[in-house]
Length: 205
Image (cartoon, rainbow, N blue to C red; front, side, top):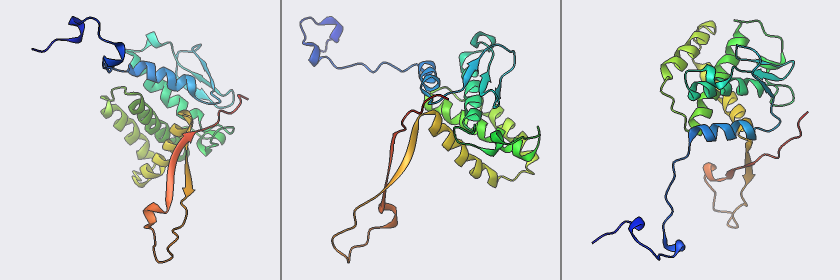
């Protein structure tokens, strides 16, 4: 006969298996925002959502203004990715230079921000069901780029760098020690060891 743990008494605590409590995606999203190094100011003063690189400020309506919490973080993540382009962070041209709305440079930055937001939602476990909306948004800006789909690869790289910054991590490459046997040649894929480590938090400017 099998008994549930809740039906038993006197079992030492160290013998009781831990239950895997599901992690709340919204809690994770909050932590992502809170732990971003050298973060921009976040304001709820205006009705629209935007990032102001001059003031280094993100404005976003209060969370109860959105249909659901997931939509709030989707927009906030988009603006956070924009903010990584500031000169004291990753210094992306789409943010540091004066860009005309609707131009190719503007379109590139929007695609980077949208891809980065998708990465951050996935990282926090937020459901990404509205993929059609994301795809339509990206497709809209690709039209300005004359549907140069190769740019997606380019934008993905910038988006990943932005996400790594927001998550406070970076990739480092460390050379492996060469083999003592001069006749042994390591495959190219094993000549370097890639690891992720926490980025030292920079002081807020």
